[in-house]
Image 1 (cartoon, helix red, strand yellow):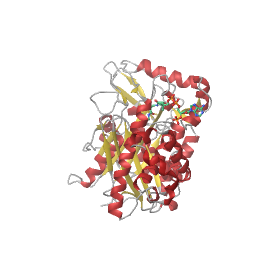
Image 2: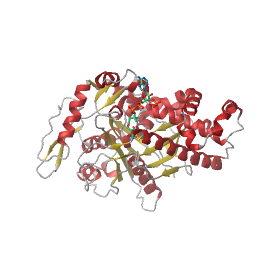
Image 3: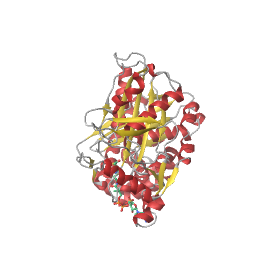
Image 4: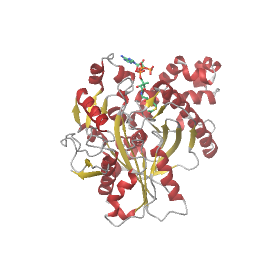
Length: 440
Ligand code: ACO
């Protein structure tokens, strides 16, 4: 059986320039734009919540691909933007399906930081491979508002949602037998305060956890690739494109360099590593924290990064972190940015990371035309059509969200002007916390 994916990505139309934010926050010029590798950042006010953006993404997926609401047999949502401790976002999305008479749809929500969308994706794929599959499509929605309290993490905020259609006989297929996973207990980023949208985050630790998780997944993936494809020294040369969970793109650049470092450790005899032999004396932990190792491999990886990673980072640089949606938006960006011809028979590796922590690596092959998907995505055009706001607007929006979080009997005050035609928005929260939505 062939498994596949077509995706549609949506992001909030409001954004702020990172260079303006540097001035506003009084940090040194270049800290966010060069130091974090971010250009722009999307944000939302109180007019949108996780359910309104998921309603929009699922509706547009149906409209753009002309799929009947009755053709869906499974709907999975991955998110960490929790607005209810019991009722799933998926159950709210059922409003779209029940009015077409389809109430037989499996799946609910999955949560673990930025990994929930990947787990939701695995659930959907596993369903299609199982004896429970009834022949219909699955939809996976991954979406979040990444929002941080005032401080050093705030410039790594963002907002986005992706909806993906999973079925058979499609142009993007999962490679079997290569998927790898690493999970462990870590306190790098978590949300213990249910009265706030903000996480408790140890930023430095989260970066180290991310890199370590990558190393584990990458080496396990490469071992399987070597065994299955009978490749003697598998490594970055066997991969055409990489997509990463992208909290900020500087971390992605450092992570791609780790791929080369791991290739170097696994294959000492390769003459291209001759000059780096002195790095071998370091223990794994020493090498993980070594600035010298980082600089050496980031420099060595420069050309490969430009060719294999940057095509997937356009949206991540201009939107910011999207938590569960981030890595899937990077995959959508490769599809949108690289031509269908150039992608034919190419391998795209995806690395998903969620704090706490859960991580996996898998790969896709492009085996058919994806021109129609790229056309529907049009990521560059959509990023260019957004509304530029000031850092003050951004702060006002976050303050508004802070004030109204978990409020009942409430009508949002955020302007409707920036909501795109055809998108859903939050109309009101009634005296029993029930939320209703309208479509513009
Ligand atoms: N010009 C160029 N570069 C600069 C400048 C400047 N003027 N000023 C600083 N930099 C560089 C620094 O040298 C540093 O580079 P390095 O990463 O190579 O060391 C980088 O910019 C960041 O500067 P720091 O001072 O280290 O940043 P800070 O401590 O203020 O915060 C952090 C950065 C930790 C990423 C913070 O934004 C954060 O906590 N973010 C949320 C957590 C996160 O995203 N974790 C990633 C994985 S988990 C997840 O997805 C949530």
